[in-house]
Length: 241
Image 1 (spheres, rainbow, N blue to C red):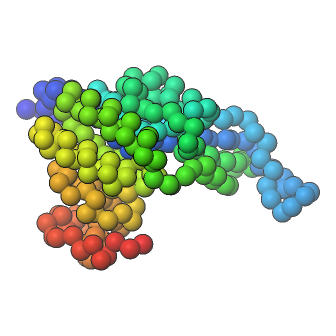
Image 2 (cartoon, rainbow, N blue to C red):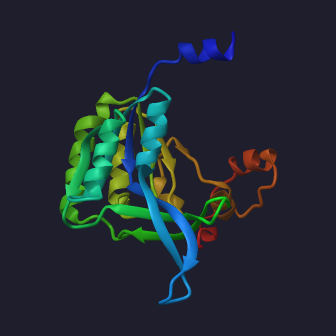
Image 3 (cartoon, rainbow, N blue to C red):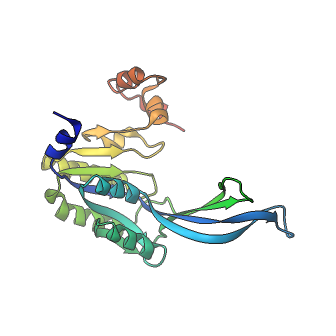
């Protein structure tokens, strides 16, 4: 059977993504001179572009693979939250679980990209607007109510944790428990520096290489090292960054 035939036989999964949704903004222009006020580049803006970031980019990638995706997350009420919600909806992602609140800003990562003459454009600055404080109790309860209502209609739950406050210990524990009760697999992309005990009961945890090395206390230099690390018990004492 060919690879194409194999993909054609795969059903289209319904995936519930819970996590820290973000907006990426790219401001591009010419950087041919320095300011008279300080020794900094002057960026003459030519265009701006908005992209889905964080857990919302995970939703987009899953949608690109033809999955049916529902997003659970939090934005601010006004821009850039409005832009983020429109991008999600415009990508065909279900946004009934996206809560707009006045209690916290939308996570925005803005990259300033300049080019000089015919040179290659390069990033000169990134500005982050965000809070990493845990969700307030009211917003947390609202999200969990939505998940409780939606979870049974999905085949997989994916927790996309960027450690920005949405994936609170209570949220993670409750989502995993509800999914296990309904025999729904839970996949976790862990937050940087978080204690993996938070994800106890998940079907699969997918740390990157540095996170895996910290969790297992072993060096990963080859694919075989990664496979062996995946079979080792987690040593939580190695998780401090």
